[in-house]
Figure 1 (cartoon, rainbow, N blue to C red):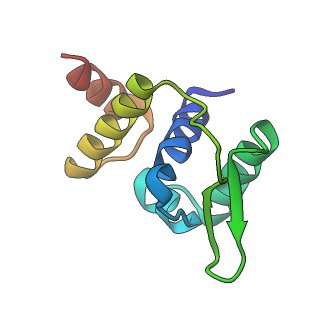
Figure 2: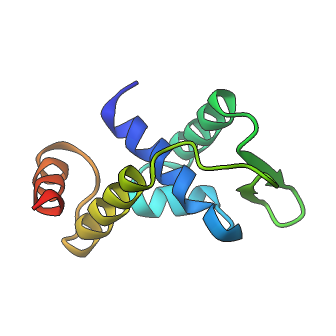
Length: 108
């Protein structure tokens, strides 16, 4: 799995904590990816961890499945969220040199 894809998987996992809904558009906004790519990522997440997400067709959102636990470690989720947030503040997305610089800044 490519690093950018894994980062999006971690982000998806953390995004549904505490009952927060997740839409494809959230991924598009956070990572600067297309709607088809967001759909692929959500499909991949559900394929790998089928018991983690449920789709609420009425609301057209994904939610954490009842009783499910996060897939990824809390420290990793926090690092990913901080990095994505920092990149957004700087007007970038998680790709190339900007991602590496942001990750290094978060690690300091």
